[in-house]
Image 1 (cartoon, rainbow, N blue to C red):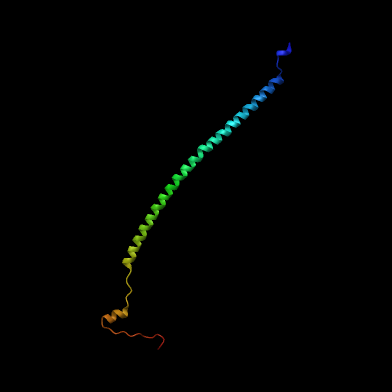
Image 2: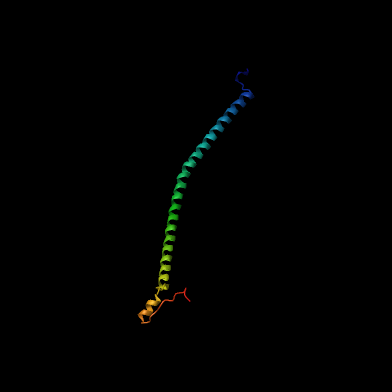
Length: 107
């Protein structure tokens, strides 16, 4: 009579095995999803990094151009402001004025 009946203990063992198998399946799925996410994320990070580096290079070039232009402008202004050193004694000689040097050590 009791041959077709399952005990509560058998049901618990069956449920326990199913729970463990389901837990392993979920963990495996979760692990694979994380691996997939890493595979997808790495190229994206690399692509974004490359784009950012190109932007930085462009910005550096713009700043270098600005510095070059500013230096050129400063050099132009300095050249306009520079006066050639004049040898006063030579200029006086050119005008016919004789100049003699004075020795500072003799009084």
